[in-house]
Structure formats: structure tokens, C-alpha cells
Length: 199
Image (cartoon, rainbow, N blue to C red; front, side):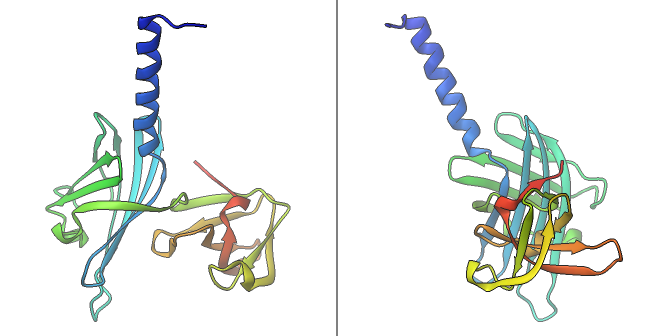
């Protein structure tokens, strides 16, 4: 079947739009600086609505960290986050680019996010900070982010676990916390494939 010029143009535009949206996938992005400091952006995209949690580690003797949580709407691949929790003057802008996310921070020193963390962030995992429901009948904890370090402890289908932004790691295993009905907490690495994000 031969397409008309108009149909061909529509198909090309749809493919281009799909390619642009592929760049804006939910996940956690990282920027590492030469001095050892790093910053994570947990980027959740639902349509054009963005929720982001940011965590920075300064690599200093006092173990200083920075954090930010905000939401916004993606317009022309750029989102200015708004926050009810952070300093009102702090301006965080995230731009979706082909190779990752670009972030800039202005007047965010109270939240310990400075221009040192401006720049391009590369995706390290599909996981984002927040709560997850276990979807596997059993999901075993691991001591390390390594499939060969399986432990005897596990969670079962329907259990809720939490992934904190400061514990995000690259790969298919994620470090989570589980609290049982008696209040006892268990933590360790679970397979991301066994979990479903809670919106």
C-alpha cells in the first residue's frame, strides 16, 4: 500500500514525536563531579506532568547533602519545578535532552543545591524514588546489588516497600525498606522486575 505525501508526513511527525518522548522516560538520572560529589534526579513523567525528587551529596567531611522535591508541567521539553517543601526562592529547571536531563539551580543554597550541580544528567536506572508494591509471589532480598548475594529473607506479593532517593543505584536490583505489620524493618536489594511503582 502506497502512502500519500500527507500520510507520509503524518507518519514521520508521529515517529519524531515518539522519539522525543522516548527521551523523557521516567527514571533516575545522575551527575558526578570531578571532586567526587554527585546529584541524583528521580524523574517521574505522567503525560506532561512531572514529579521530581533531587538528592545531592557534597563529598565533604561533614557529609553535607542537599535535597529538593517539586512538581511541574513539561512545556517545550522544559519544566520549572514548584515546591511546597523547599525554599520559595529556589528555582529548579529541568530540560529533557536527547542524552538525558539538563538541570539548573538558582538561589537554592539553603537547600544545598548550587551551580556545582548544574548540567547534564545521565540515566542510571528505570527506578524512581517512592513506594512500590511487590508483584512477584516471593521476592528475595540480596545483601549487595548482585544476584549472587541472595538472602533467605523475602517479601510476598502485595507487600509495600520504599526506595529512598539516597539509596538509588544503577542496575536491576534496588535497595528498599520493608516494614512488617509488627513494625520490624527489613532492608536490602530486591529485583526491580518484582516491583510496581505506586502512583
